[in-house]
Length: 487
View 1: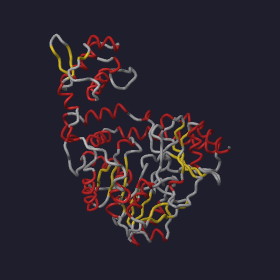
View 2 (view 1 turned 90 degrees about the vertical axis):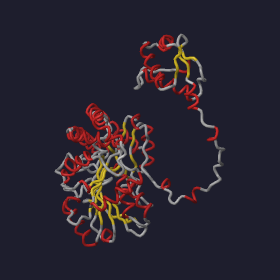
View 3 (view 1 turned 45 degrees about the vertical axis):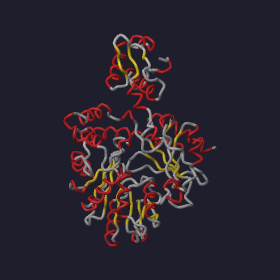
View 4 (view 1 turned 60 degrees about the horizontal axis):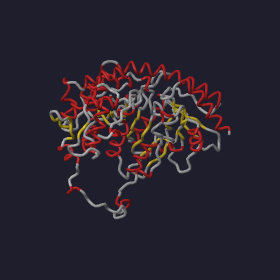
């Protein structure tokens, strides 16, 4: 046994027992340990690693049970021959390398989404001291113990079949019930179970709807500036994407709107400007949609983060014709990695979306659905929302004061609340260059050019989010940013 085969770190999240097991399994499967090679005794291994012998015994016992090791009386532990055989790739499966240029894949691809402009964020954003980035959460605010309890219940024997079985195109009935009873009524929406579809986040819902409703001849309208991911989805389906004008009340009631077959909008908290559409404008758009036969997709993102004013009814709740399709997500109040969203539409639309989703992913992971359903049903979600409202309200006010001090008249306070500010820099400012310079100082911001769909998009806009940054760091981060802008 070579000493370098096993290393343990006491500050790792994994237990010492797990680390010993993983190290030995890797050594066996990677061929570092040969067939029938002896393994150190539990006493010797414990001494060399500085751990208790019981820890090593438990690790070895697990490897014996799984067939990686064999024990021989009065001889010790050895690498199992069967483990080596199962790790070795069959000779018949080995294929020669194919030259990278043998196939012109670019000419065979029917679309090139990788060439589209997208929002880019560093994966290691938590290592930056001032992360003003959108869509992430502050882990200190999340009720981890309550979520773990719901996960334990969901994964218990009582519901073993509900999360281990393939449910084909069906959703967790408990989650659908919670969406129908707990979430939608807050937006004034009443729906039946067969009018609700659980999706892998709002993004999945938007892709499903685009696939079903948009053809190359469909004229689609969306806000300018607007959500870049949905614009990219639309442009994969049709060349006719109209960029509809905005004003101080959100999406404008215009002739361009009237000419569309389908319109995407974010009325409660416009992406990215944070403007909230007033009730009068909502009623006017619905009237125009009925007159000109326009279908509306309403993305009610951040609907749970209104901590400033009384909520304005969702477009879907005001819709008498059934022409509004509602899209929601649990990402902004739970966590984005959960990938759970939903759409609400007429049952015949949901029926087709369910069948299409089955062809793509079948259904969202059942264990995640049941855990989220329990989290909602036990009241943990409501408690979390109240906690987020307190934290976000404080950060919202601190950022407002910091922007007034360092960037006077550059931004408007979001009347909805939410988790971000939309900032208009001085003329000539390049927010992408600013973002690069700011990152070198530990400050992360989001350049705004990508939210515009026109080739000559303005470059002086950027977004500052506060959902994932400690409130004590907001003003210092804004001060650093202001110094960079002045230079």
